[in-house]
Image (cartoon, rainbow, N blue to C red):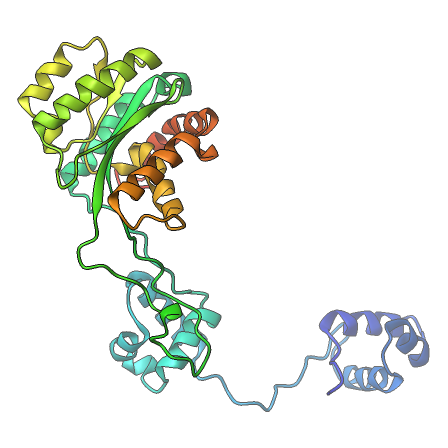
Length: 345
């Protein structure tokens, strides 16, 4: 192993002590270096202007494959095209990186430019009109307090499947069989699934779940029944003052509108395509993650596990649900800040 070179700080310290007529032997002892190293430093500094520290000579290793200018060009291009692959980059910037292998380009992106490859977040596509509606909703309620949001009944439906796809990536030893069952993702051609409706408020907690019959999707008549038999009692029991639902077509049927027009609570004007503005989505995502570890091979087992999670899991405590409703002011501010674009929620 080679001797560690003196750093600029060490060189400056040694030269300062030498200027005070300290011997090379003493300087070497104080710095934990060899006397020969100190002598070479003083010799190199002798022919330089006063108060100048000798710089390390250029190494004799392999020159860099890319200049700093090349790196800046690559960085600007990748930031402007974040989904580009190393193979495509080799083509698009052939004048700069055409002489490099794809593996080397990947290394440059990761190590030199710190542009790591990450999984892209999946968010709804928003049109200009959708963004304007989101902004209108947020400006309308931007001054609401956490206490006001705690009296809102958040509702939504979600589809649960009996078998959910696991991660597409596995850690497989070199030389192992790619098709070993341990390293494959199990799929089912037509997995059983169930549509679930649920609701909660920050101040009152859970308002219950409802499972649609097997093979049936939500329509206007069925949704009206859900509201009459499940929502209205929950609104009264939990003393909610506002009702929030998404803009699904069945929610806008004439029968549903007539029913809600007679209610003694306010129906909030939902902007649509805004799962980040309905905290019950967090509940669904958590439950789906937890179901990966449950036996949900049939629809009956799936419904049992969903109900058990909703009723018994500590994640759905009163405090957790209040925390979700309390996040609404932050969600509102974030949408306004991002000019209607989707947020992290």
